[in-house]
Length: 297
Image 1 (cartoon, helix red, strand yellow):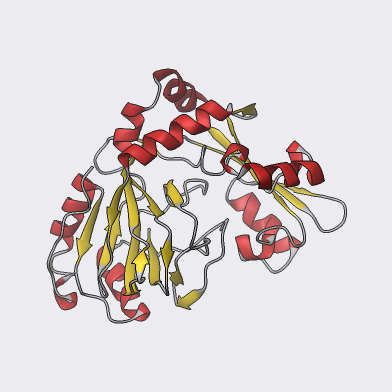
Image 2 (image 1 turned 45 degrees about the vertical axis):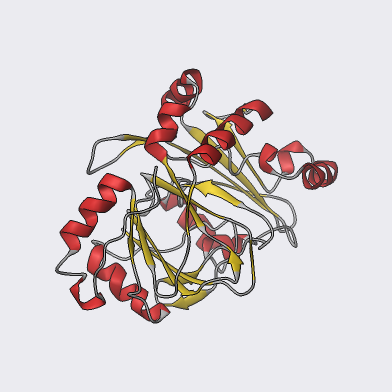
């Protein structure tokens, strides 16, 4: 996969060019609109010109700041760590159809957004893994405790346990209320998705990204010692409950590392991405880096 093709257009022309822009997105997985963004609010207008409806940041695993109605900051991820490519919100019942990322201020060094083709990943991964994932899907479990990672209130935008329960019931998320103030959630999703427009099959899941073996060894050791393997903040499984081997997680990571292509930011650039076709990550960086993010349904 090459970095996203460039589609020169002015912001007022985006609505008129919608069909052509989306053709590029469906073909290439992403397209870059250079220099069209001046503010976070404007990203919402670009989203509305391209998407059928606005989307939201749901079931977050890392913090985001709200910059405006339906517009968010990039994931709060340590600047000195790589963010491995992952398909946006693959763990929700209805993932977003479009992901828009706009650059308000590029970093001094590094910080490129990494794009990786989910169609190519499907063909590059071991056949037996793909067959099992396609047949059985994958399961994500999350454990919410005070002072460990995001709270369930932040992750699910819920003010009360009752609100949390209503959301989980509506979106096929299992919910277990634990003694004290803890909650456990679980959800089983498709691991391979058929794109609704192109009909192509895509490896679209967080099977490796949110697995226990993706934690740094020292961090995993501390968490397992404190809470046990079943008490980790997040973990993933093939099917309902089959644990992944470390080698399986490493293989998925290696495939995505090989497929990753960097997009270097210039102020005002906007990436329009199809999350089913393309996973996104981020290189480490230094200096301020301001990106705005919006989702389309």
